[in-house]
Image (cartoon, rainbow, N blue to C red):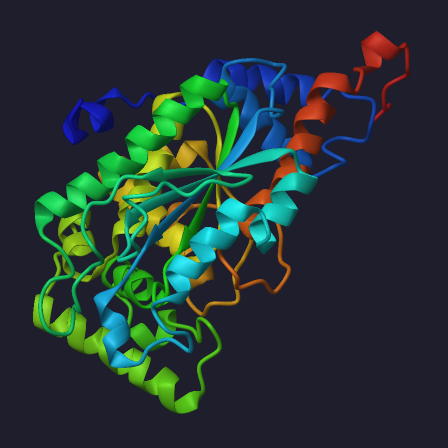
Length: 357
């Protein structure tokens, strides 16, 4: 399959099951829609999975990793080598995403789609699965040239799609999440959002890894310069990704396309994952019907990005870590929502008198 085949093959969620789910929700033994967002989530799950008994027990988070040439501009508090060190930590099972995924019985698949790390000759081994599908050895510094070629941008999306599709089929997954690793990646994410939302970088960019005021001002200037130099077309998300994006952001978009293609829900993590969601949405807006926003990040523009996608964040915990942590935490709520519509009886089933009003 090529990217055009993938995009054209994605079907809308099933409105018949959505209506059936709403009907069941209105008859559960509780005041009308008394569990609020849980009712909303459960109905969307039914529409996505084409069932009134949605399943969310076979879960996986895909942590996409890449390096970024723009770190040369001093946009991160951490050096590039941390990307490689964190990949090892993910595979070993000692990072934050691993702890939260274990708590939630979710697999962690770590994917190198564009780092400078030397993992090719000896595949990493540890508690978690590692996949190497490099597009290139890191993106280029987009203040000097485009971050990547157009064909590389497409390849990054298809790499994420192929990895996720394969694992969805191998493990019969029914709920997946997106995660990221890549020092400096809030900068290309902010650049992507600035272009697509037509906003100044000062409205979008945050402090990422915790940079100081001087570095933050520099980061905004770097994004402005990159956009001015490359002039990405906001109506062509492939062009945006190629000129100011990153390989893991493209791969995250591919994971979302795979979820929609396979008709399962995908939980979008924070700022970087939502930049990937903007790319996927730009390719086919129907993909957003399969997305759940795990949480609202502390990064400045995250709220604006979610509003563009029409997504309401499940959690608000002042998080800004990435890795898929907010998305995996939100799986608890999604799981609870599925159980509500499946296991709570209706008034008729329970023999309980309904409201007189």
